[in-house]
Amino acid sequence: MQQRLQKILAKAGIASRRKAEELIKEGKVRVDGKVVTEMGTKVDPDAQDIECDGIHVAAREKKIYILLHKPAGFLSTVDDPQGRPIVTDLLPQVKERVYPVGRLDLDTEGALLLSNDGELAQKILHPSHEVNKTYVAKVKGKPNTKKLAALSRGITLEGRKTWPADIEVLQTEPQATTIKIIIHEGRKRQVRKMFDAVGHPVLQLKRTAYGQLELGDLRPGKYRFLSPEDIKMIFRK
Ligand code: URA
Image (tube, rainbow, N blue to C red; front, side):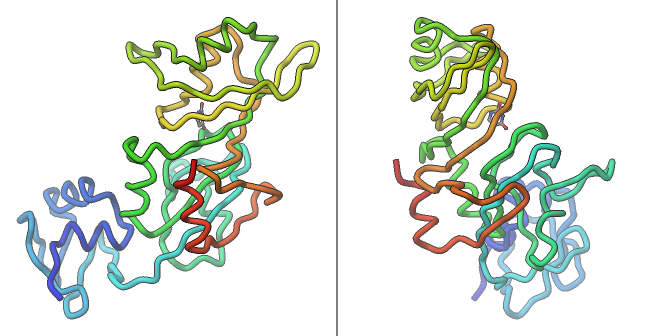
């Protein structure tokens, strides 16, 4: 069956639909060996050969979903020109080209989803679906209740207020406090910036869940394949 080229690329997990459109415009996509730059070109993925950046797109590739416990020190990317450790180094047996769904900072550990299902990835990342992300942050010092209330209500970061967050103090030590924080936005280094803004920098950060899908006792560097039931848990509050 014929489908729009950008849709095929997105479905194959190559890129989001918007990014796929850019790749097409940039002349990086070939159909049966010929560069196609016209948007909306219809192609039959079962009968035609599609290449993106020189890689053959297996349009009917099985969709897989992985939950990885990313250790600190690994980049959430599939390629690093500087040759630093990347998350896909931890999946040597996975043959499919999977991509991280969102990102964790180099120095953050915890739950990271990887998939070749570009459409599901977009759905998880789009703020309209409000997928909750739970983090456990160890922060310097002891934020007072006023500061915690401000973080929970929303604070202004780079000119934009953060959405309300759920905050719970889990443990206090003389020099540090461990706090659970649930947010559904995904701004870059958001949790770190939020605590920086109230004067309590993050010392350690771990993402423990997407929605109701918990990292559980998965050890750092280990992963598991997700079932359709697990995927539903991602969208549960
Ligand atoms: N917030 C951060 O500051 N870092 C992450 O990796 C994720 C959320």
